[in-house]
Image (tube, rainbow, N blue to C red):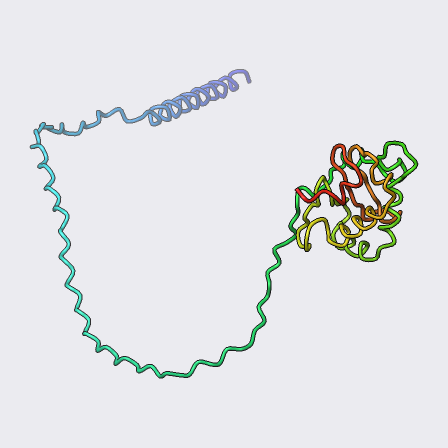
Amino acid sequence: MTQAHRPTANRNRLLTAAASVVGHLAILLALVGAQPDSSPVAEPPAVLVQLVTLPPPEPPAPKDPTPTPSPAPPKPKPAPTKAAPPKRAIARPAPAPRDVTPLVADVGTVTNRAAEVSDAEIAGAATADSGGGGGGGACNMARWLQAKLRKDRRVQAAMADAHRGRAIRVWNGGWVRHPGQDGDGLAAVRESIMWEVAFAPEACRAERVHGLVLLSLNDGPGSARVVVGSGDWRWSDLVSRSRR
């Protein structure tokens, strides 16, 4: 039994060795087939390069000069027009002038500097209540003359048109002329003052007065006021002295 077993073992070893050899050969063939083809690569033929010198470019052609514009054709002359015949003037009678009343232009208010009285002069003037500027005698000519002027309607009317809210100087050693008035010293006021002073008592007319005297024609605000006087004077000077 031992001898029969031996041939079998030998056969198995041979088969195993053969299979091993076959496997190694297969691996070797696979490795050899996987290597790339190492055949030499054909080189491309060499290219011949030759340098050639090109001629320089030609200069650009000169530009054409600006063309001169051709002169414009002359304009045709207008045809002469015939002058129209002159029209005959027809004489027509002028209309008769109408009766037109001429208008007198308003030249405005004209003032006389001598007739104006400043506020300082009014403040320093004597009044009927201050004794009238007299020398302290029994007569109060300012109060007496003021009362006479207040009763005279002609004086009131003349001063209402002339005073314009300011005191008016009518005598300053001579009667003062006022614009727009006939005569000197406002005719109605001058005549009334001269009349009343002329018939005053002689002693009162002879009283000496210094400076201005302010006579008010009523007691209301904005009343007309008359101013007489200049320096040293007497009431009688209003009658005897003429205008300067």
